Length: 453
Image (cartoon, rainbow, N blue to C red; front, side, top):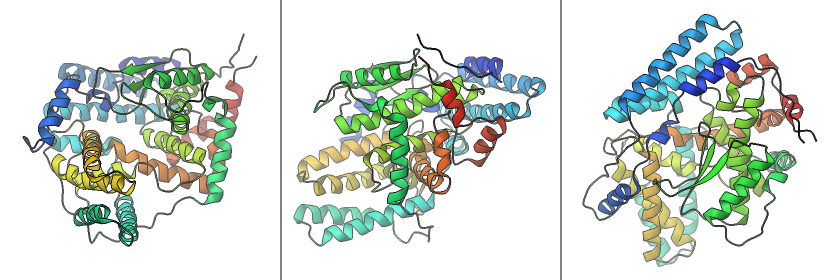
């Protein structure tokens, strides 16, 4: 029988109320019916419409209004009654962030793209010119190198991509990849903490969605996260793995398959980071760490992607650069705001170049490139009307921003790695780090909470 040491809870009552009132993540409201989305895709690819029209059946304006009222009432009660100033500060920031998330979802429901842009930036931030320029410059260098030895098909793909890449970008800050020494340090810490989690029960060449589900469930059992489950999603247009902290479920797309090394990375990302930070945070003295401090998502994705890279032992590029690039194109960081169709055309040429470079013939590369570009643009324009240039759902900038920030944290303060799993916070956010320090929440809490035989 196992015993888990539980620290004194500072926010038990507030956390219970918060969990009752809080909405799902904004992107949970932006899924559509699978058949309707497929119809839009076919019309779009056939050129029958300039931009797709997405359905959002989960949006309910009366429900959103009630959710905002509940959050505002909870915020007032907290400010009036909570005596611990640190706890009050943490919840005040969190509730403000949740209220803005509700208003973001409401803007989608009402079709107000001006307000949508305002609130997506408030919740997730804006794309970075530095990261945008870094990616464009890296791709240009790669294209110039490949041009010297390219065959006819690749030369054409290089020309097509060069013709749509932004030019004359403002001078941006130079971003450098982590050193080999820093990566090795991160790899050691990751394996010390996660080795048992990524030991697969079967060594297979190919892992189906059912296999992924089984391995995820085994990893969850290793964490003693009894309430959690893994669900294969064959009802929505979901294309990526996702963790729902509110529902305590991990969703696997019905068409998702993978191989051995990638599956280990997925376990590190989804279970070892997102699920573990939820579980450990809820077990800590500040239960809000289970749900997450305000705007914690960037830190969570930064830690998750860093661990994937650390497992590989090398970092060739930062995570999420292509998604950040697509959002930057939509925003028009090069001075040219774009709608869904405009971004799709650029991303298709980028993916076509990559596929042909990897040996896929031109015809198949075009089909695969269009499919990938569609998936990317569907993510980038979630919740929007897809036709307003300069408007995008900016959530996916957090992968690149978070990845860069976490590597910087490891470079400047490697000891913070010991606290990465304590809960959902952003290690690159000084206010979050200050808050944990004030409450005395550190790596010792994780050691104390480990199950004992």
